[in-house]
Amino acid sequence: MVDHTYRKKRERCVTGIEGLDNILNGGIPRDNIILITGSCGTGKTTISLEFLIHGALMGEKSMFISVTEATSKLLKNAIPYEFFDERLIEEGMLTFIDMPALYEKLGLEKPEFTFEDIDVLVEAIGNIVKELGIKRLVIDSITSVCYRLKTEEKIRSFILRLGKLLSELGCTTILVSEISPMEQRYSMYGVEEAIADGIILLSNMERSGDMLRTLQVIKMRGTQHSRAKYVLDLTDIGVLLVPMLKGVGGG
Amino acid sequence: MTVALKVGEKLEKMPEASVLGIKTSINTYFDVIQGILDNFANARGMDVIYVTSTVPATPILNALKMLDIDLTNTYFVDCISNVLMGRGEEEENVLYIESPTMLEMIILKVEYLIKKTSRHAERKKIVILDSINSLAIHNNTKILSEFLHVLTNGLRAKDAYTVIFMLAEHSSEELENIVAFVCDDVLAVEVEEVE
Image (cartoon, rainbow over all chains, first blue to last red; front, side, top):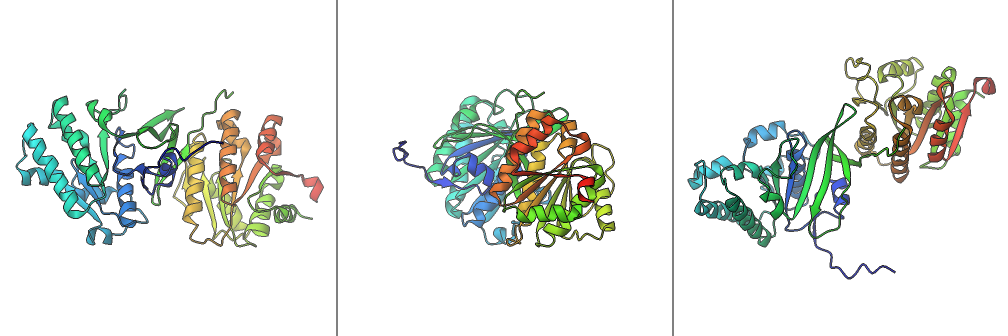
């Protein structure tokens, strides 16, 4: 008989995306910092938003830090989820922050950050998370933040420090990573993927002239998970997933 | 007994979550649809999800309206209009898929419609796949077999009925075997048998 009791099961942060929770054996291990990575149009922001909305609906305070796009525009373009309720924002369950505004407030409007600037930024994000009691955080995108860090050492320092702080605060974090379509790695600078506890890869896959959106969990510390490729559909009731058909040996 | 009655009666006898293959000729095609919709689904107050890869949804809708069939709770997944470059104005209750080769998208759209209509929890679902022959034009038999396996098992888990159409004029032993493998029963409807 197989003994399943030897391994203590990590508490899960249920994403609320049924297919993804199944793939992850119940959800993202709580306090993990994970990378959602993919090229443009693969659904990174949409999935991240759904993760936050479900969290807020389940009573977990959630926050979206937008680095590249003003949140007003983001909300206008986001899929009008059937389950999204604007009261979540009004009641403080769902918070949106524009990173450029935060840079301005912190005096970080500069093309390249120093190690001291990284300290200031990490501390500021940590303080907001702590004060608001945030349990789910999305930074969209980490690639844009890293653009101002320039060196591998600074990127490593930023993500390690941020990850440690957020984990101590009991916050499960998604870092959105942008890569080019033909990229052979999972992040722009190569450092992000090594530090993250988990990597979810989103792709546009062409098959016989059809373009399919796919999702694959590459790694996820703290849980067993499927590593298969899934096809996804972005709908007004949320992200739907189905295993990609293989048609092996078809003729 | 008419074709429509025969089809309705057959489905009545099948338990929930069953998969029925129907081998029909082109002559009895609309009688079979009428039998499923009028004599079974509408009579039981069910939601119908009609996946069409044979004919675009609009002509089927128009034909069924001519037959005075109630389509209030019938939803279409149209896999062929885009390929035929014939997608006109969007119809209400019709979801479009870019190509019948996007088999995963068929599964996802069916799942979407099941979830979307699940607010009527008391309403049972029936999914009609029309047809295996037209899907076979665009897909190899291996992936088609895999598709049917995933689709029917998923629908069984949701207690939904599944009906798979086979057009007698375009059938082959291989296709019939693929359908028979996932079906609980196969009903052959011949004109001469029922008239």
